[in-house]
Length: 372
Image 1 (cartoon, rainbow, N blue to C red):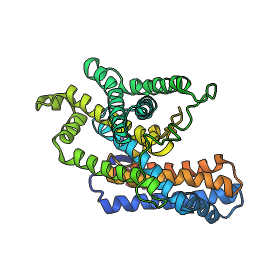
Image 2: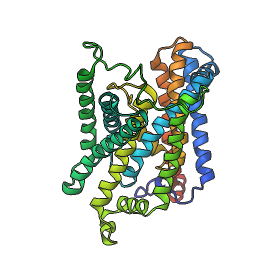
Image 3: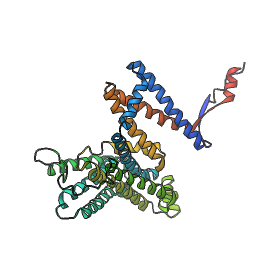
Image 4: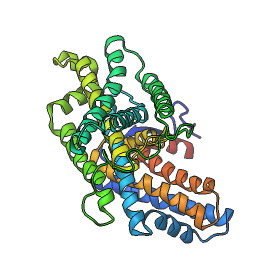
């Protein structure tokens, strides 16, 4: 009887090179369907509820009314903007985890201009100064870790992460400085009576309140796609991400690319902070970004750094979040259960990427040897 060849494994994992776009999409669709089936089984076992009722509640939470639909698309736009901001750095393999802080700093700069300059500037000029201040503040906040990385090769992940905490504490400090009324511990609505510094509505319909944010996100998405895939700077980012030594060999100034790219990332985050303050909330809090700076990291990676695919990834994440809240309310469940469902779905979506990028190869010789 022949012995099994113990020196060779039964199977091994190999990188795919032949997965077409259609097959990749099919794998993702199957993963989402499988996730829904698993969620349905868990729902029936643990709660006794009809899973279709739960899924219906999720859809209702995101798109149940016209207002909810507009808010869902607006929130998707904000998450998309932050993901777009982080993407150039990620393609360069500069792990910018500081989106949360960069957005907060942009929001802080916007609030400072609204509060201090509104008595002295006409509204169009005030909004223009707010915009420039937010862009510069976010850009500078992004450049700081880039400078240290370029000059002294510091760990950008820790650097940008810690700068989130600094930004949060700066906002907390100025909230106490600007609090109104004194002792309230919050800034309140800025320029509530005059609405100076508030971004204008587009049109008189309900959508006019949300449309400007959506338009900015669409324009930024198109611009980022063109920048990454059709510009010299995008090519340099790609080369630096592949190999810094190769980039230097072909004459690319790696330090300059790192600093420039991080300024762009920070500037878009600053733009997002400007929109959050001037266009949506008209105030500033330490929780203004709501953790979306970290969620955007997942969105960027899910989309494989493709700005167009990020639109759908952002919408999916926001849909799940809105749906989770509605499930907790309408089905009488706590939010922990709805978060479990969200986690399962995201797990399947992320997990399917393994089967897109890799394949399991069975060693036929080992199989034959074991059967003899």
